[in-house]
Length: 428
Ligand code: HOZ
Image (cartoon, rainbow, N blue to C red; front, side, top):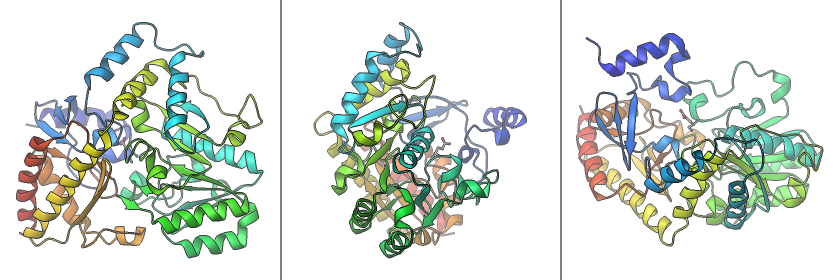
């Protein structure tokens, strides 16, 4: 007799490719059946069989306040009562723009879209239109959504399933995409010395979260800033994941390095579909209808989605919010590292703000190559032990993890109990 989770997933697989609407959710690399989620509250979610889990996926980052936060849900309900979409200006969008421009150092003007993919795709087009150049630079293992030009040696699901460059993208489209090694300043310098006058933009995750978590070195980002300025290229920080997640000013605030453009998503929608791209006023003024670079969207700035984002950002901006969130994430990674050490496992972990990485290798990785040295088989077994014990982490060794403000001592204790058991079983 199959379980209800299996029955629903089987129904899904008949009609939806691999049974999912986004690849990593299919459990393709870890194996097994993904639980079908029925509800969430705070740090916990429940599947359709009533099994409870402590959740470290948090919808892949947006749910920084936890699931179904009361004030966010109430804000959504109140706005929804007055209409779901108008395709016309609303005051919430202006409030969101005021909030983003005052919080994020690089953002003088901003436009809202409905996903991170749309944000990065639009930022690249704008950078090309602004500079009149075609080449873009990205880094192996960084994932910037699934726009054609950016699906080259990408991270996230593309990496998880061993297809970091996608079929269906004509070579002509990616011919202008130069892919370099993350944290390799020398390679970047060489590329600029050969192609500097043709490079429209450099796009980077300043803290990569789609090849597990890898921090850029300050020197790497500073080199990037200097070279872009010297050669007139647009520096784009993809902060879809790190924006309002590692700190109130994003990774750019932590590093003290200001890009020309920033892309945002996830937390700024509080669990609803919102993305944004913004930056220097002179660049943003090239967007239609002011300028020649076209970009549009029927649901862009959707009032219900914006209400969820605004309610979330107001709470995230409260004094002490990030100190407390960071403390929870630090306790989590320290606790896990300690338990792994007791079990003699090659394991390391680190966190930045409310984001963390776990690696089945000794020492935190600083490059894509080092991430690839992790023991994938051990990760898969650890993942399933934790899931059985009621703890969800991303079903891939190439994704970052997330804590929320709803994770507290209780959740951490239960996680440590599960991890003690999981690490000890890895010894078998
Ligand atoms: N690519 C995202 C994670 N880095 C989304 C995964 C999903 O929603 O399934």
